[in-house]
Length: 545
Ligand SMILES: [Ca+2]
Image (tube, rainbow, N blue to C red; front, side, top):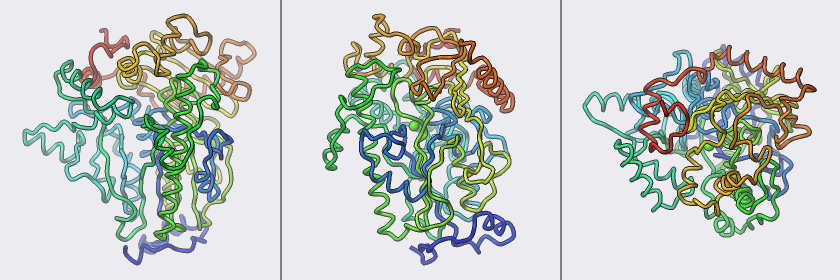
């Protein structure tokens, strides 16, 4: 490693002064700018000790949190991977950029192009002299060439529809399907390798188009590959996915899995063994995450980078419990978010209870590097003196084989949800349910199918039954008295004023962003779905036309 890339004791200059100086001084004067590392915890709810949950022990997350700021009320712009990641990497609402559908624009025939003025965080960091890499999945819903974003760690032959390589190959008459990743995806969703093969063979047969192609790109690399620095890195630590053998994994690390009998079942779910197991699995995923965070911190200490690296730890959305991931309830939107700057006095350690939009990670990252966040961003610098969000706005639209449109306004005490597609239930045989149906048709093993069985038998009531029945247009929850969001107050005259206020705020957001979810999907967008899923997976009314 180059000598310039050595730890600095601290950055004593106040951030505002640093930002001011950057504007008038050449970039090379700032070799002391901090490294910034995004630690992505895929699919995880903030059930950590630092968030007041004592069900499992999270000593390493707690220790990291002590070095920085714990944000208690951070909600994602979209409760699912690709739209959420598109928001983080651009700092712009997915419904503004048209990146709101889960894994859209992944085929050459259908491309989502960002407006010219929008460039990504790694590109901006790179232009400011940072070395950049992403050792994890990109999952961005727009056309880009990965080599523009990341200075190293790019695959040698990146397949990305619309990328320069792709254009060149296609103009040379070659077809590239970016195949091979979908089996992994199915295994992540809980299938055995054998079942995944079976399903892919069926998909090939049904679609006649070869295997599904929606995984997008991922890179490699680490801070060890950085030549000069400073670096902006994106890495991943296992989150809520891949929990099939989680108990064995924990025991091999000397950790004891939590007993399903010892978890709390929130009111929106029936208290049945399958749900308890699902919740326990998620807690156990958090124990694994905690262990890995401990290992990462030790690596940074051992390698002398503890003291000049800012760590931003977050999840892209909440757990994969049935009403969480993919849906705009609090459980899907609420995520862990910790910014630690050990050894540097650039942020004030402590706790923050104010409302934060998780995509503010973009503007905040730039500001920590001394870069003024650009005007196109909806995101704001969390550490700016005037940082304030009255509401956090979120969206959910198409998830795989199911089309929906729901919008969320999260306030200090109340949470407003607006459902626009009332002609379909919330649980509409999405990809997770279709996979569960294949492996657990009788609803004995999975929470999804066990709940479906109970719904069919008339054994669910109220909020537990709501996802299977006729939607209501508006929902309003009092988070103070109803943290599980089971008592919809939207029809209660006592809350009419609150409802009206939040409805108005939502309509302003929709108008301001020209919410792309309000328009019918293009022919190309629909074709991508037809090509990706077997016909019997397509339950939304749009597919019947
Ligand atoms: Ca995710």
